[in-house]
Image (tube, rainbow over all chains, first blue to last red; front, top):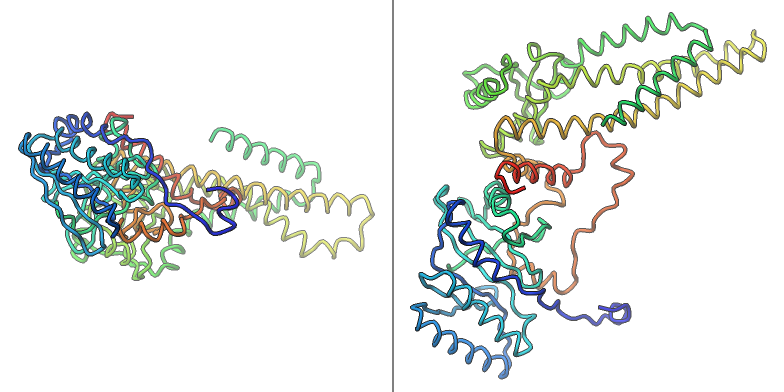
Length: 191
Length: 286
């Protein structure tokens, strides 16, 4: 955003950072072998649906394409809207790589349609050997970085200690968000 | 760190040189200062505990707190300090006492309610490391000369006028130089003392991480106690995103250069950064 845009109060939504989603495919091996995390077989992409004919047709086409490719690999796709007005496209399947590829297909389709700035995040769900609750790795498209989210017992509590341990354990295998104030939680994830 | 000690030493040497050069009342000043030093060393713990309204508790009164301190002392291989609780909602913990034998570890009721057991253990580990490192003695000795300087400065202000009348000009000038130098020494050693204190805090964080083996628990505890900028948000990404997209309000990276110089504790972000590095070392990914 240039100086005059600021002066005139014109601003644009931030565009996605260079895609580093696929770092998850390799990092997943480490998570499963040495970090006590196993995939719940679910991943989701969260975006803000626009009420325009153009956008809706893109979403429809995209969902169909994902369904078509997904049925080949045994992955299922469901779509739901949440109370914040965001749409969750949830992929379920036993093959983790397929989940990552599926998520990438959705974000690519939205980006190709010029709606890349509407994509909020991708979420991967994991079962945690050391806790009774799941942990999530959230990928922020605008930042091109992942961060851990470990919900704790009680309403809207999170286990910061576990999150820091996960960050340290994954090390440099995953681009982890360095600014802690951007580790926003996703309460009530449907995955 | 070595640089700080070097500077401290340099400043003290200067002070002594000036005192010898001035040659006036040095013995008296030294005796009084030594008395003050002893007083500070032997009563500071009681004063600190009393000012916080802390009360020593028995293992029956606070079994969990005692059990936690027991385990940490076994790990650290030190005799068990006394355990006290202060009735205040402000989350805080501190350790006082000259040696591990005479030390008291105190936690407020606020911190006992706020933190999870693992986090509380990490905080107690930090305080027990202070005891182990004999930080009270270190800081008292380090501030010894600063106290002398402060004393001379006050002495000068109170009696400077009285002496002026019946002395010749040369002596009078010398006297004011002593006062000025003492004031300067006090200011400089104050700043250096703060630097030393910040270093001891880092050392205590590190000691806690080694004692408990859970640096991340200490990070979590520090963030809860401080509630400052580096805090991981509780606000949902979806509710945050629209607001952030609209105005891009992010906590500004405060220019802390000058405030850092005057604070006894390092900034939270720096402590979290170092603890994260420790956790990475622990996990073998550093």
